[in-house]
Image 1: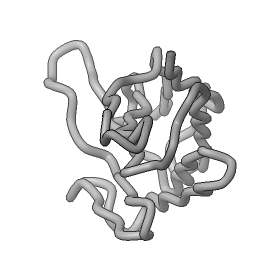
Image 2: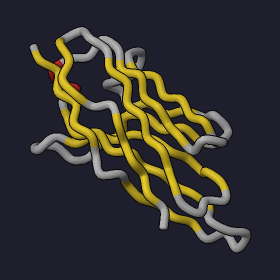
Image 3: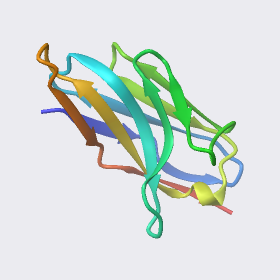
Image 4: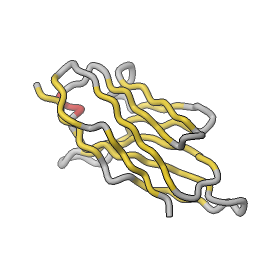
Length: 121
């Protein structure tokens, strides 16, 4: 059973910074990619940032230049450093992961439980 557990959400002022972390546990042979998405009550879940095991990164347009994603394959973690936060960044942030579980190529794709980020104006 694979699990993703996020940490690091909270309340921050406009212009502030916050870091999120996500750790994967379970029988994982290798990481394909991990990342972050976010969702507000009125919007669909949207891409924040993803990173592959090879280090290729992708960012959502609204966070480019402000957020930085990093990963540690050995520790099965992905981190998100969020700078210059804005009230519109307020959302529940979800960790996402795609993993290969065995030599047969079995994969697992899933989500963490989410961590709330609130940016006050």
